[in-house]
Image 1 (cartoon, rainbow over the protein chains, first blue to last red):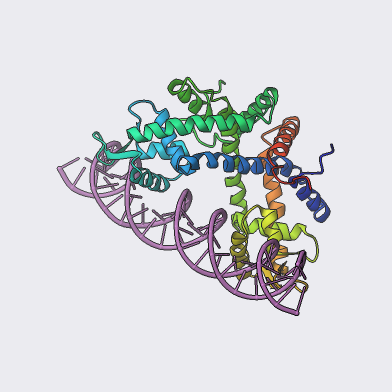
Image 2 (image 1 turned 90 degrees about the vertical axis):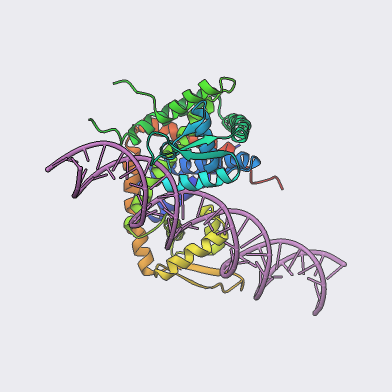
Length: 171
Length: 171
DNA sequence: GGAGGAAAGCTTCCATGGAAGACAATATAA
DNA sequence: TTATATTGTCTTCCATGGAAGCTTTCCTCC
């Protein structure tokens, strides 16, 4: 019933042998976080793939869907919401448009702008895919009991708050 | 002094409005984990870049360094240690070899095999880069107090253990 | 010992995203 | 009003990694 040392612990042990001058304790957190995130992403992508979507496309459809009717957003907004560059968003929209899941039209107010909108097919697809996605997330999180999950969420929320705010300067 | 709702909380609120039939609680954990991991990776890469390294190259050099003298490993071992395909490892080694940081030679025992070894320059570079990397990890983790960090590590270790073992079937 | 299968590394092709710049349209300043 | 800066999107080029298949070598079993 003993835990035989996980991958990260083995890496730490090796570093302690090779570089006893360094305190590699942070790897215990950061290394495992990275690893959990990688494994989770992999599992999540498996569900996206069932609907013919990559992670990027799923994110864009989800951002449009949760915007509420009429399910429209500017490319720039989508970029901000999905944490990628506008160039990446352009390509994601290209793919989604080709697949008939979104449309692109000119904005009425600002002639530089464009409006990306979910089509009926896109709406229908993301509704199914998102429900399946959430089901999947429940399964993945079932490895933790509710108290652990709550603790983890609280810790991550606090860390994120101190990691993220590099934005928002005082006006 | 109030927390104005972080990015993930806003996403959850939008989904609760649009899809009240779904329980999006897991996003509170998984979404934030993903986000923390992304931000951390970004910060870590900034340090790698100071040494002219990408994440992939850093990982390979680190794996060689912590192997201990004479700092050698087979490409397949490197692939296993760094969680990427052997094809990706081949390309990483190509780049590192071109930069004079590693050498590649034939294995003596098995003529299919190759041995990748750190050069003097590679050893020297990864020793500096790794020390800087650990310093950086300490800084990033300083946002949490030691008790929080320990809690977080324990939770992630447990989750990882239940997420990872898809390997190791009983013989 | 020879045949078939497995293993190791590499190659090819492709998908994705970032960085930086091009362009058009709008906002701001003089 | 004209000149300048800024904004929003898209384009181009490049870097990286995965998937699948190839080649060589080794292993196993008959």
